[in-house]
Every structure is written in structure tokens, then in C-alpha cells.
Length: 174
Image (tube, rainbow, N blue to C red; front, side):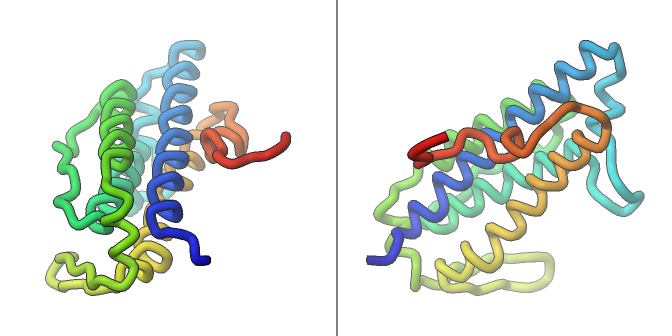
């Protein structure tokens, strides 16, 4: 029996965003402990043409709600995109998690073969729901979660893989 699309999407989004929330906590605590300006981490980037940490968190949370909303057939939650502090980013991630958790699993499961269509710049993108999730949305989502984690780790915040992964669901041992 194939795994339901709702099980391939919502628990993954919730787990990763929960991990990202923990990364934000550790970055904030690091700044307090080291007495460094939080803006140094919030605006950290690897290259001049790359998004900074705060934008990586914003985009990761946006992808989380797009995954949930588009698969469920509802308008994704919209954010102001003006978060400037660790607390504001944490609140955004929490809203994204709650939105994802609120989606109707049956609607998501029914989306596997439905066409999902959305505007991306001047183009309209169209995917079957399963392909949207597995080959487009999740890679984008993981890219931004990973880059946010890497920026903070690179800045010296003591993080481990477990911080990136968040609370692991379904682990039987260990």
C-alpha cells in the first residue's frame, strides 16, 4: 500500500520547521551568551547574492505553508515578510507549523494526481500533486532549511545534525 501524501508532507514540514525553530533558539542564546549583536547572525550570508539567515527562515516557512496549503487545496497562509528579530522569526515558524497541522489530510491525500497550478514570476507552473511535493516543493523547502542551519553553524553556534532534524518521528529505538 502506498504511503499517503499527507504522511509524506505534513509530518516532514512540521519536523523540519521544529528543528529550524530550535536553531533560532540556539542562535539567540549564542548571541546573549557571547554578547554579540543578533543582527550579525540575522544578516549572515555565504555570498553577496544569497539570501541572509532571516530570509532563509522566511522562505523555508513559506515553502512549508505552500506545501500544506497547495496540496490541501486551500490558499496558503501569507506572511508580512518583515521579521527582523529571532523572536519574530520564531513566531513566523510557529504560525507555519500550526497552519500545516491544520490541513485536512484527506484533501492532501486526494491531491496526488490533481494538477496544482501557481504563478512563479512571469510563469505559471503546473504539477501533479505528488510531483509538486516530491520533485519541486520538498527540495526547495530542504534547501532553505539547510542553508539557514548552515549559516548559523558557520557563525560558530554549536549545532549538531539533531538540531537540523528536529524531533524525529517514528523512531523505534535510540
